[in-house]
View 1 (tube, chains in turn red, blue):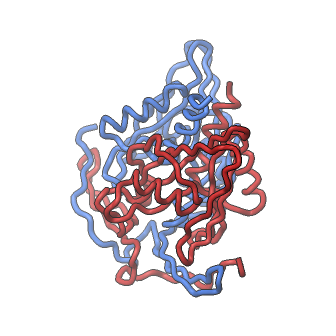
View 2 (cartoon, chains in turn brown, blue):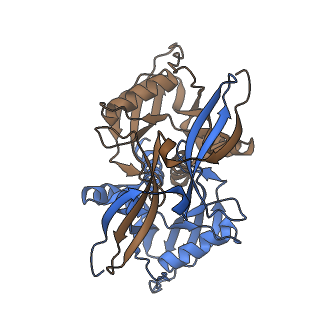
Length: 201
Length: 201
């Protein structure tokens, strides 16, 4: 990576210029019949599947290593930080979320896996935006001596992939935060749920 | 609840009219030195703490009941659905996220608890928005015969509280989805992490 990415300026975005997001004024009637207004952001890219994005939890099984998962690190301009996230991506116009999850995992991490499960449609931040997603679980079974595969990144994508034993994930996220990286809320929640199940019993 | 909330219309929101969110055009330089633009949404309400919101995972311990947690159901206009979420709320201008977590839990659920832990600042949807949050863990120790406390809701807030044994949380979310409710991604991830820890071993 030849240089650290950096923000040059932040300006107000005119709605007429916005290509990726739109701004909604939602007029609604509440439970008492009162007219109210809510402000929201929406993606303009939602395709046929009706789902904006997928994220992927992986389990890598290997004959001589502990069950592991894959997280990625990438710079995110909205929060001006290197974020630690689950592999994820937008669902293309004509693909299904299941197809997108296997494709995105392959592109961002190099690994090809078998989709074991995909969640229902869940909402990312329903007080602020219309954004929704599905969470996939993809299984990867490795043999002794299998090489780490090559990522298939688009031009202009800079994504670091990290394979972590699942039992070490929570502590790893705590350490990334201490090093100045920023953790995605959904990844943190998954790891916190796992950690709670392991430590509360 | 006298009537179902409903959306009357969705219009484009002019930036000049937006009170709660703003729209940012972020000019940045990527890892190769190339000038790029990112579009983002931001909350206008971030206070002194630098954190937009808190969410709260609770553990309710009781002499004769299994360890339980609290989830809430409320209608969310941006996704036009009743959402199943963790108790959560915005951090007020002058309070700390820790203070906000105990206050919000009390308001939305009636329960007063002891803050056991609060996460670092994590980001809710860093490809789309600047929104950030912290995830608190609050412990509530009940005695036999303790009554369920009263919620302390604001006028115009309609929030249903549900106490669920933690081991039943994941299946409960699956059922809520099947009934037509929509699950918040962060709550789903927490429950999926817990479920994975319990079923993968």
